[in-house]
Image (spheres, protein in one colour):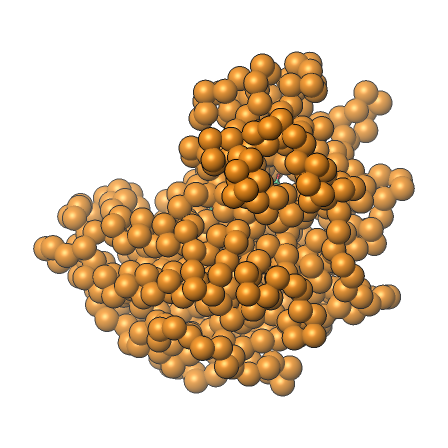
Length: 612
Ligand SMILES: Cc1cc2nc3c(=O)[nH]c(=O)nc-3n(C[C@H](O)[C@H](O)[C@H](O)COP(=O)(O)OP(=O)(O)OC[C@H]3O[C@@H](n4cnc5c(N)ncnc54)[C@H](O)[C@@H]3O)c2cc1C
């Protein structure tokens, strides 16, 4: 068994920042990650980091843009914290060695991004995330923070009192991918989940194969609610054949979208008469699919993104990476022809419910980064707002887990007086299933026991038995079959345009996947580098996460941000200025709501019509 004050699970931007903060606060902290830190998905971030750095811009404008972009579902205390801390935290990155792009006069460059009223996206070419990971990892190495890389965390060691608010997290259980060994990691002060997004729940996604919602599922099984899971961002410019992202930086620099008639449709058909291509992502994604659905798409599938007019010099200076992506993955030379693009799953606005200090309702359990929902993005994330979230809230979670006083949070978590109880929505199937069988195919209630003595050892034992069972089982269903069925259902029915009928179909298929998973087996008997085993467990996590996305999408019968519902195509502020919370309770998902906080430090953000 390993033992540290703070265990950070995940070594992307959020995890690395949390670990450095915990170290700064004097804790003995360790990182446990299924990938080597610099292979984390943050490395794919191209466009940049939003921070109000220049004269003429200020944090209040950033906060306002973020609240508007969120379609008034962001919690103001979190949004204001993001906007206030982002400048200092971005400058700290610079001091740590981040090679931000610069203007002729030496100042850090900032570019316009969708939904921003000021060009405040700070970038390092089109490889911002790559540099961020390297700079942060250098800090980890410099401080001698231990990194257990290629350790796959399978579960949390959490007590199982009836009320999740009374539960405690004492550590994690992980599987060493290299040796097959299963070990406990005891956390004397706290566990920070920084496991990234759940994009692999969808078939067409800009996310890497490692984005499997593991942290979401572990927290959910332990009883922490998942918040606003229905809000999935579909990025307007992914390459059609692979889902690889073409950064919003292309449109930020002046790239133009055309339909098959060569029309600049964002203006031609009035989707966004002011901001055109630089409207918020949800607006552009719906516009593109409407073009395709109305017969104006190219090859009935995508639209064109043209950057040729920017000229070779500017493209090579600021967007060189994009040229390589278009050439390598689509065979298109962006200097001489337009690039094909279509919406692809990109980001999860929702996640594990936390307060401004990264704390969940379970004592000792924290979450930060894309796996968390604090909530700054509400119904729709603005491009360039995820990276500042990693460094601002990663830092806060690390500090708090290490015992630093950050003040009383304004955001509540878990069950409390402020929640509105269970939904009366008509659910098409009894979601979930009760009990934890040997295949581990379903979420279990809480942890092992309320008794903390030997809790971690018992969780380790349970995990070892689970792995033995999966490997020793001779036949059954392979995870890949279940995973692709799940991904197709999500892309077919819980995509940009959603209908009640479609979501119910998805929920039925998810239920079938859950049942088939009862018979899952691992074909590869090896104990070393057994990717079959790891992906089998990831598929279990994807089932739990996909179900919460579909359930949230079903109950929220309104159109807000990225969540469009055919049956009610208006934003319904009277009934829906509230977060959807789904927790695993008594053998099934339980759905409840918490009002959004629109009161900021000095002002209230009154919901307005969101036009661009
Ligand atoms: C292509 C692309 C481009 C983007 N560009 C931008 C941009 O320009 N600006 C912006 O603001 N946002 C951007 N985003 C969003 C942003 O990059 C991500 O939201 C963010 O990087 C996620 O960081 P993270 O630290 O939460 O997770 P990740 O970087 O995904 O890291 C997750 C970590 O968790 C570990 N992990 C996961 N599960 C386990 C487990 N079971 N056991 C152990 N370890 C585990 C992984 O090994 C990894 O180290 C982009 C997203 C994509 C997909």
